[in-house]
Image 1 (cartoon, rainbow, N blue to C red):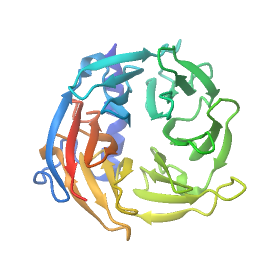
Image 2: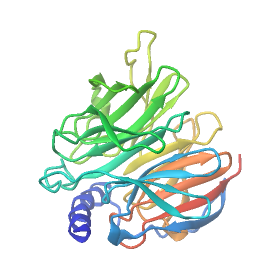
Image 3: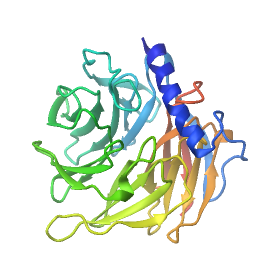
Image 4: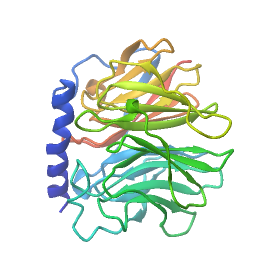
Amino acid sequence: MFKKILSRSAVMMATLATATGAALGPAQASAYAPPLSDARIAVHFDRAQGRTPENIALAPGGDAYVTFAAGRQVAKVTPDGATKVLATLPAPADGGVHTPVLGFALTTGIVRAPDATLYFLYATGTPDLTGLWRLRPGGRPQRIAALPAHGLPNGLALDARTHTLYITDSVLGTIWRVPTRGGVPTAWSTAPELAPAGFLGANGLKFRGGELWATNLDQGTVLRIPIQRDGRAGRVRTEATGLRGIDDFAFTGHGEQLLAALNGSSQVALVQPDGSHSIVLSGADGLQNPTSIALSGTRVYVTSAAYLTARDPNMLLARLTK
């Protein structure tokens, strides 16, 4: 079953490589560049089991929580590389073939709240399963908000101060807002900068300093959206361009500098506050269509789903010199 799912996903994701001008194999740039060092593959995942890591959230102590897209799973990866599946979501009755754009059901964005609750997204193309899900420690997964079945919920960010979750929809070009207790989603922003241009639009999402930052995969952009005093979305500002195939990202802790996963080209870019960028990791370091990035201190985590390379989904670790 997973071979069929991954085959369909490879066909659909090839659109990304074509649209961005990226080759299907990993980039041939030299190994890691400053300010990153000591890059290594820490964990190899089993593609045959659908363990294609899509997103990552970190916990104190070094545990990493990941969504395995094709496996419809949420898992914990310990510092020694052991992987434990915490939940497998129910398969849609149609097998997921009506999931927009991709044609297979997949778990996507994930965040971890201070009380260790995990929130994550599931896209199936069916109204009974698509939406925002919650997993409390020792509990079972529960959908707490339904999202449009004709959309593709993808990126997820948490504002812990207001107990609010924000969700990018890569097909509908929308950022949704949902309370952590669950309920009916509100379309927080439908700005044109979020829209797709043939494949996937708004993708990665992070909350920082009273603002939301998002990426647009098709447009190759990094966007900043202020949260106004009344909670509404402010004017969208484009902070960086030319990042073709950008997926998830993470701030380095040095102002507005960030690291961005470039999916189709199997690269990670260091994006400066002025929007300029340079490649700091590539296929030469083991990247296989990177999907998400997270930082804990100076440690950088990069997950690769190998959607296009179809070889080695993995998690890479590197050191950041600040």
